[in-house]
View 1 (cartoon, rainbow, N blue to C red):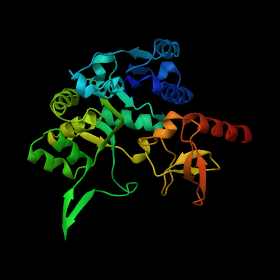
View 2 (cartoon, helix red, strand yellow):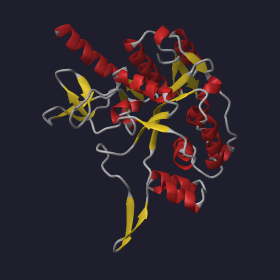
View 3 (spheres, rainbow, N blue to C red):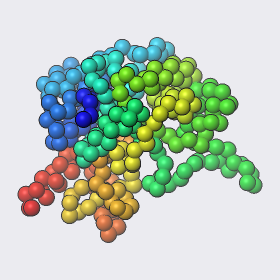
View 4 (cartoon, rainbow, N blue to C red):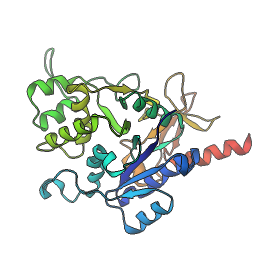
Length: 308
């Protein structure tokens, strides 16, 4: 039997609609008693906080976990959620396992949550890495001349900017980025202390926005803490395909499994406006202009139920 857990997300007032949609997707699959939800307030209004609490969410307004100079913060209060992601057991005590899901994601298949819980139950950091058959490239290079090239991977660029040692930057250069948009970890796992230690270090010179992923990479790839890499459908960021008969988003390639967590990473316009559409292929490779946001797929699923 898996232990107690809480699903946590967060954001500012602009992300409030997305937070609501993520919670709605969870509630469509599990009642509040079976799936507690926590929210990191990183710039929500009082009205939005009250609404989320009325829906049964535990809303926490944390302090900045690390001191950030004003010139570096530049009023980007929403980044508090990125930093708080590495301190979740402190803000939401009393649960054996903590699951984080970004607000620009939603749950289509509960099995993804179960996979996250199972990975954490193994005393490992359960997360999806950004590499494999759904990635257009495995490693970005800047070709200099002839056969010589410069590594331009996400981890190499961010670790170099953060002032890590040459040996550390090289060790991270060819490692896949761990997608911090969805992960799970036991509340008493040693990873949290390692994340926070790396966070303090990388924030001395590094970027705020990507500091969570770099801190995770340091703990996993350099410290060697155990990780459980989950299949892409547990935190899917494209390419996009849907099954018109089942009215659900599926993996792009065979076996076209139903997506567990739909993550709209990089879909800036769609996150801001639910009316924005993007091309999504059907099972015969025909393009359709569709939204990836939860309400559109909730309505589609209801149509299937009505005609069944």
